[in-house]
Length: 176
Image (cartoon, rainbow, N blue to C red):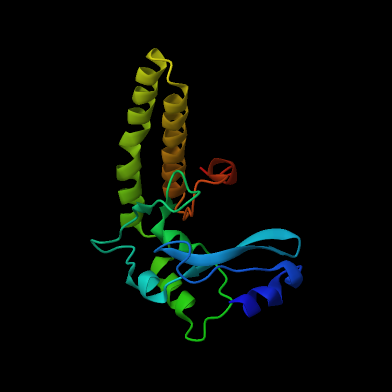
């Protein structure tokens, strides 16, 4: 992986990558790079785990993992975003998997809306209870989680895959 990362990085001398397995079970490692002056996340994923995801089956599992730094969870379906560019894919796995995930599956859209819609009001109501006790950290957490759920719904309504919460509401401007 290091050799592949150094091929595309702006500064190969400072390029470093993690060991496989270092970031957890879904995103198993990677690096943060600068490529053409843009910040780029290089993510390793298990081909077996990605291949087992079925966006329309009973185990479509739009549900989340909570890897470090993704406070609102990361979607298992995030790999399907159209700008996912594999560095090495000799068996053309990514294109085969994208053909399953694109166009965006209606069952996944419905499942995400159903999963996150109720949680928006639930978070607001919990924030109100925390406000009565002046628990500022809990208030912030509830509000943040409610906004993260709004992002999930907005992305689903627009039939777009959401990788994580970072900049999600800002990125969605210009859509429905």
